[in-house]
Length: 231
Image (cartoon, rainbow, N blue to C red):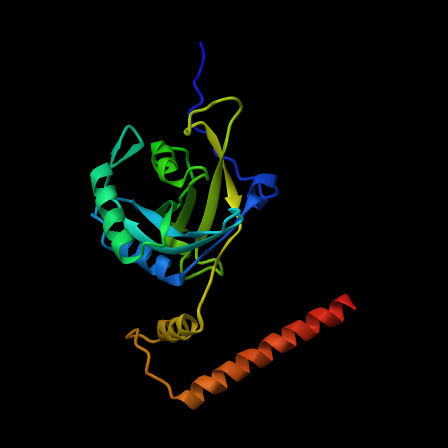
């Protein structure tokens, strides 16, 4: 009796494959994903969507700039995407942002584990010759951890199999890249979490400057302590 290996998920923190490229994402992408999750149909425990952005010529740097939601059905624990809906959404997105290409896909929910599904091979058609990137967003950790619950994975084939579904998911370095304006907006939103009514008042330019100088001073103090520790 033989058992067919369809899926193998591995978390090798020191695997060489993860150093092939690095990824960064905009906070706007995380907000889009969170909005998608909050608007999901009640029986659903997770949501699936496409991620878009830009890739360097040599493929070593990936910037995730946008995302859109996808429609899917689940049968026998396998996800099946609505291909027509995906194509329509991508074509509409290309009209507005023609420079952004499909990079892969995302899932958002609770207690997520990356898994090889037909979704990986679905996106491989549009990301070739590169592998699709798979990012997961843990909703519970979104506002509780420094990485905002974000994890990114690349897929590596297993053995001599040519099927996209027979692969390893290996972690890829991925961080959130902020613009100055985005950082200010996020800081203001974060300041509302301690208020019962979840509101934050606007602050003056001088107050902004004072906050920026205080943060700069704290950064310099941390750097000074690190240098003293090394020397």
